[in-house]
Image (tube, rainbow, N blue to C red; front, side, top):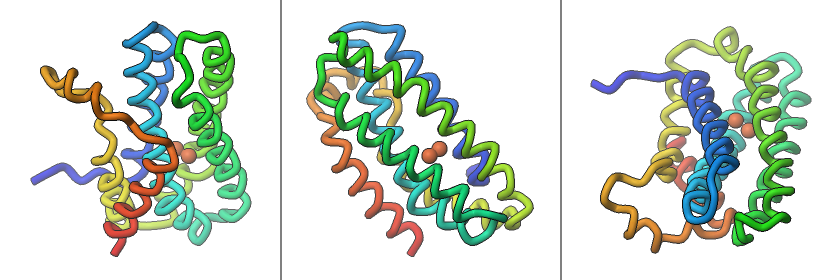
Length: 182
Ligand SMILES: [Fe+2]
Ligand SMILES: [Fe+2]
């Protein structure tokens, strides 16, 4: 039987991986940076979309002041998605990419910290474990779209698979999450 993870644990684990990928992009160059950035685009687009579809609606309804907390987070997410779209397709070693990426690398972890502190911190008093596991299941369905690391030996094949525009990843994630939510 697979281990049952609740949505707070799952989202925090995704935040950790997102922070790692931001660091990897910053620390690499050329093809390696391009690959790390593609991993980041995919995971971040899937993560933020799953939050918008599943997590924020739950927070709006179930935590004190949820509407306000979520409003700020959604604005941050819209900004991050616009920044990702702009970066996607740029030469990752160009000064313009590095400038814009530096801003993203500050904003995205700050956004994740705010979610953990003002939003997710209230989930366990707002719902029982079973409910939080159900939310995790829907987020996981979306995560399946976002392999964060190529499997050994499949690098060449993966290089030929474009991440696709951020908007396409977002649309596809929405479909999957809505199906998972029934
Ligand atoms: Fe978010
Ligand atoms: Fe998040």
